[in-house]
Image 1 (tube, rainbow, N blue to C red):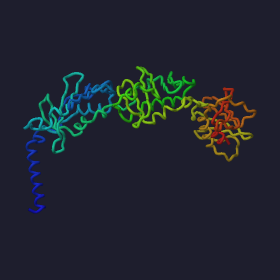
Image 2 (image 1 turned 60 degrees about the vertical axis):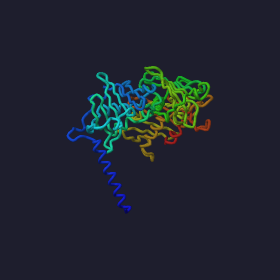
Image 3 (image 1 turned 45 degrees about the horizontal axis):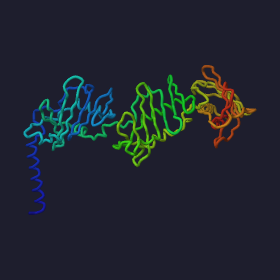
Image 4 (image 1 turned 30 degrees about the vertical axis):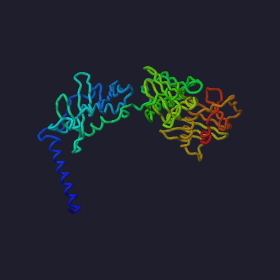
Length: 429
């Protein structure tokens, strides 16, 4: 027999075998409606979901609106998105066609080793479905509904969803809290803790130094902690690394309307920094990007701005440097130069000066503050649309701790501080 003839003969036998299998396992019966909902339930009515497979049980329980907890095999936070997605898909699960059962359920992969999904409602009996083998047509998975005693096909999407590993259902969030309810952030490392406290939407630094905090930076830290995700789950307990629980290199406490939540970060391993957070049982690993955020010094969170105003509120601006004096005025949102009458300076220079004033910050240097100069090197006065007048006096530049700094006095303060007036001095004509 020729080789080509043998190949065609084997393909013919394979085709006969496939047709015989379809005859014994028809995917659907002609005349039965497809795309029918298997269960009549709303997604929000499902309170818990159980997935049983090979004597293993995974249980997810709703803990709030779009919030879920992992109950079994151990308690942990569940990832809300896949849990909610499973509830929605289950509630809208549709049959791709009823299968005429001519053999045992085990022949369709529906045995003790199959996947069993149980959904419990607020009101009403539990809803159960079993997932078996994938149909040879690739159309979907065989599924059996015990309450209806029907064998049908369900989508590949649903069948693959319930087969996801445990790590898929666990939340990778470091902490769970409502940002708008937080009133204190505490970071403990070496020495005194860094404590940021909010009162009436205003943040203050209370430890290790006291002062008004930059609210944007404090809120940014809170958002970063909320947004960071663990990189990998660990099955090894923290205490097993040593005979006693190792000392954390960072501890973070978030206090809000509910009980305080915290993270402890331990020494670095090959897989990252080992960490744990209450009330989770098992630790996990976090990346170095979180450590970089926590290592910022307390002074980073202080409000160092010397001025507080809205740039759009400035309507008039006067600058002096030596004998040079310029007067700018905003007319219909455009700057004009009133004095001197003739000059090569462009009116848009006023925008740069206002922007420099907005970014004017003070430096923290050890030792005494700068002495008041006999004659300021430059002066800037501006008026806001509410009539408020603010004057800034700037002395000659100096180098302190390797930084170029200028003595700066803001009207009303009656004292000079070191400030970053380099750009301002560059833009004053």
